Image (cartoon, rainbow over all chains, first blue to last red; front, side):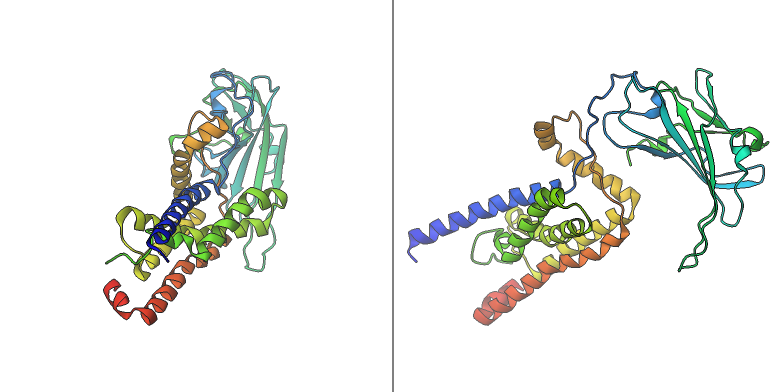
Length: 192
Length: 162
């Protein structure tokens, strides 16, 4: 190969490497799709601060505070709050689910007791659950693991629900705990 | 360590790197949309984990003028594999990775998608994906093979490189 040909070949190689670096870096970053933006983010204040920012399509899912507690002898091992994202000011209501997981081997409270739970917000408004269900423990799987009992509550809250939003434990309230906060805590402020 | 003959970063022109990048692009931008599912999800992991150590070593070669070695390939593969495993297994690692990638891709996202602030990337927390880190070994095998060939042709060059 002539000297000119060799130099041209090196230039071609250098250009190909540069292109591969750029394309490769781009492909590595773009391989995971971003969370999509909400189609019509509401102006600030249009949606209650309880629901957090509504700029990206990522459903709310966070622990309540406290998430672990004992109420009238029922041992709750986790309390989670779930709500959809991309809310708008014109939404008639927001389905907010509260899930209570109970310790393995201990029963969940009766549905009648769960129906006495209520949610309140900073404006003094109160809502009762539109659904309350208890899911029994699953039988042991191949690994011998038993899923504990679980209770699910559904509240239809207004889109302007204002913090602090509290879950009151109704007839299961006792001296140690009578309500838990459903608000975003500092520890869960970052997006999942 | 001296540079081997050739162009800095030309490890990226190795067929394994070219094929894995091609598969990654085709899979992420065509196949995933056409046939979303388990296969395209795993294919993306495999192709990305094969390609990324090549990218790391080539970038190091270009920026630091340090030719790829088997030791560096092992380190690149280990860093890539450990990062991937951490992101798949740890919520905290996933959050950090999501934030960092969101910031890195923000300029392009801003221009292409019009987003106003860095947007987190969504990452599936699936521990069963971790087996794909085995693909990181490809770069080590390629470099070992290159060194073996070079040893046959130019024993002096390999001795100097070591």
